[in-house]
Amino acid sequence: MRRFGVAALCVVLGGCVSTGETVSFRASNPQQQALMRDGQPALVSRQKNSLVLVKPASRQLQANGRPVFIVGINNLSKQPVDFRVAQVEAVQHAAGSDFEMKVVTYEMLVQEERNRQVAAALLTGLAAGANAYSASHAGHGSYTTPSGRTGTFYSPTAAAIAQNNAAVQNETMIAATVETGQRNMAVLEQSVIKDNTLMPGEWYGGQLHVAPPTDQAGAQKSYTIVITVGTERHVIDVAQGPPGV
Image (cartoon, rainbow, N blue to C red; front, side):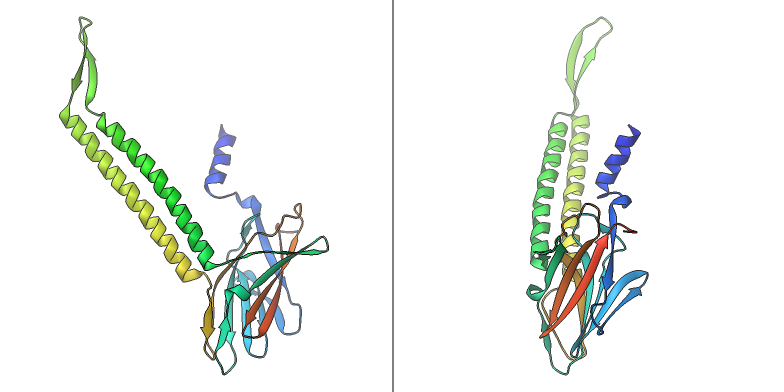
């Protein structure tokens, strides 16, 4: 029973710590530098007109989950330059071949959140319906006299209390569902990187979500992220795997 409880807790929390993976970066040319930022690996890639800084969004990535990176872009030129998420590329290198890793855009994440909200609303509706049904049958009871005679009774007061409690519980559940959905949408709006025109000297950035790399039987996974700023391509080499691998 205790083991079952621990396993259930791991599921609720989205996976135990032991499933976490870390990333590292490799400078692939003299214009790049691998370094540490606040205890996390990072890479700076500088070209004539732009600079890109990349680091993982968290200290550990969930195994078989989407890698999420924080990307910072600086326009070093004297002209506006465009950044387009559609021009970001991610490719995994495995067994001598290259495999595309889909870049998950803000629009895709918003649609996923909307789908989650629909599912949450359905579950909340079912729970609210169950509460209302139980409350509608409250106040009814049975009794047995000392002589063995049985009967039923109905208490309007008990029924009113139960129905009021159910209404309060349902209102709280619905409000919490709506609030969670609104909060998740706001987080996506504020954190996920989107198309942007950078003015001269301007910094811009946000979270870049990428489809999970294919598992390599516990071995390190290697992939490349290409971030295009204007006409310049910043090639970021990433290694991901369990700590110590």
